Image 1 (cartoon, rainbow, N blue to C red):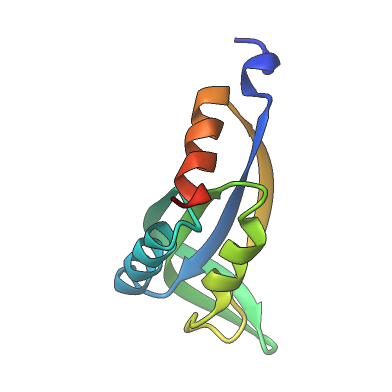
Image 2: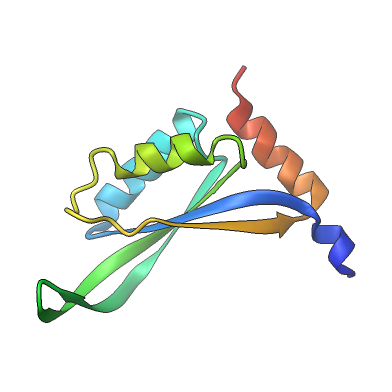
Length: 112
């Protein structure tokens, strides 16, 4: 395939949660509120990070949320709202998607 097949932009918002139940609840909320077309939950993953001067280790569950460019900000606000972490990871990546997939993402978050 040439790069032209992946020319439609969508947004991936990435975050982590401390347990699977919280990750699944957030995923269900984002999809039901039409803020994300799809949320993939990966894990557990092992994270090592510096927090308040200490090196910490934690088991986490990574969520990758697929949304439209237009809905990305609202999705990000909803991700952070109610997150158990004091400082949740929130990474936004604009990616090129196949036109049909990008159209599905946009339709899924567009509302009725």
